[in-house]
Length: 577
Image (cartoon, rainbow, N blue to C red; front, side, top):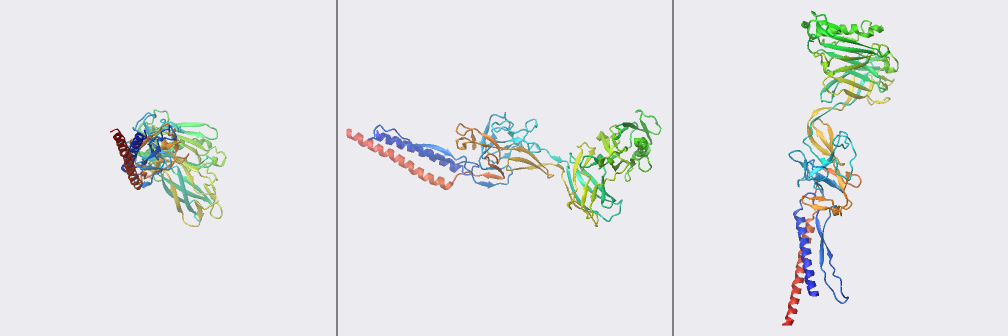
C-alpha cells in the first residue's frame, strides 16, 4: 500500500506544481495588464489517516490559488484625464452594458483605463462601463427626476453609466461683483466718476453695467446705475432689502405702428391706491383711440424720436404724482435721454423709504409694453420699477470718516429686469468692509478703480473633465466655467480576497467576499480616486521566474517519486518469477 501511496503522492505533486506553473504563466503574461492582481498557488498537505502507529499512509499535496486582490499596485502617470486609479481599498463599479435596469450586470474592478466610446460612455479596455450617480450643479446626487437624495450604499439603484458627449455648453450669470476704487476727496460737490463693468446674464449675453458715483457733500457719495441696453429697469437695494434707488428705460427701436399700446400703472405707497393709464400711438390724422386710453398723437414722418417726444409729454401729464403736489417744473419723472432721442429715462432717484420713513411721492410703476412691438421692452412683458421718488433722501450711498475710510454702506445689491428672455440679474455688491481700506476709499487723489472682480461667463463649449479624490466628475468649459456632473462611488468588501474573478480583470461578489458597500471615495475605509494615473499589475517578474525554477524542480522531483515507485513495484513482481 505504501508503494502505491507513494505513487499517488507523486501524482498529487505533479498536479499541484503544474497548477502552480499555470498561475506563474498567467502572472507573467499579465505583467502589463492594468489593475491585474498576481495569483499565487499555495500548497497544503493532504494527510491520510493512519491505521496504525507502526504504519505510514502517504497522502500528498493539495494546491489552493490565491490572488491578493487587496494589494495596491504602483501608479503610472497618464495624460488621459479619465485614466483612474484608487489609492487605498475599494473598487470601481462597472457594468457589462451602458444601459441597464439597475440590478444586473454589475462587476467590480481596479482596472481604470477608461475612455469614451463612440456614444461618449466611459468604458475600459475590457469593455466594462464605469458607473456613477448623476449630480446637480451643487454636486449633490440626484435621481432620474433630478431630485437630490442620499444613495443607499447596499443597492445599485440610480447608478448609471458615466457619459461625456451629451454635455452641452454652458453660460453662467453674474451673481457677485467686488469693486475697489479711490473716490477723489477734493472733487467738487455734484461731480461724478464712473466705471463700466461687463456682466453676464443666464444666456451668456454680456451687459455693460455703468457705476456712476456722485459726490453729494463732503465724505458722502451716492451711486446710480442706469439700466443697460437690454434691460427695462435697475433697482439698487440696501442690506435691509429696502430700495435705495431705482431707474427704468423705454427704447423705441422703430417707428410705432398706428394702434400700438403701452399701459402704465402708478401704485402709491402711502395709500395703496393705483391708477392705470393706457397710451395708444395714433397718427396725427387719427386722433381717436380704439383702447379708450390716452392718444399719443404723432406723425410717422418724424420717426421714433417724434413718437418718444409725444409719449414723454403724455406720460408726465398723466403721472399721478401731479395730484400729490409733485409737479414742480424740472422734476418730471419721464425724460428723453440726453444722448438718444429714441430712449425714455424713468428717473433714478433715492427714496425716503430706505431710511425707514414714508413718502407720499414714492411709487411702484408697472409698465406693460407687450403690445408695442416697436419697443425693446415689449419682450419683457410687464416690469415694475420700485419706489420711484421725486424727493431725494439725505441717506448717502457711502459715508466716509475723516481718514477716508468707509464708515457706512447703504447699497448692497442690484436687480436688473432684462428684456432679452434671460432670467433677471440679481448681483450682490461687495465694496469692502466698514472701517477698513479694503475696497472703496476716499483720498486726495484722482478717481482710480483698484480692482474689479466678477463671476459669470459667456457661453462656452464643453472642453473636458476633471475628477476629484472624492470621485466627483466635473465638466470643464471653454469659458472657464465648471459644473459637477457625476459622482463615482467606491465599492468595499469585508474580504476582498474572496471575490470571484472574471475575464476582463473584473470581480463579482461571492459568499466568501461578503456584501459590497458603496462609499464616497476617501470615507469609511474607501480609497481616494486619482485621475490621470493607472494602477500597474502587482506581478514581480523576478519573483515569478524564481518561482518557475523552484516549481520546475518540484515537478521533476515528483516525477522521480513515481519512477522510483515503479522500479520498486517491478522488483516486487520479479520475486514471483
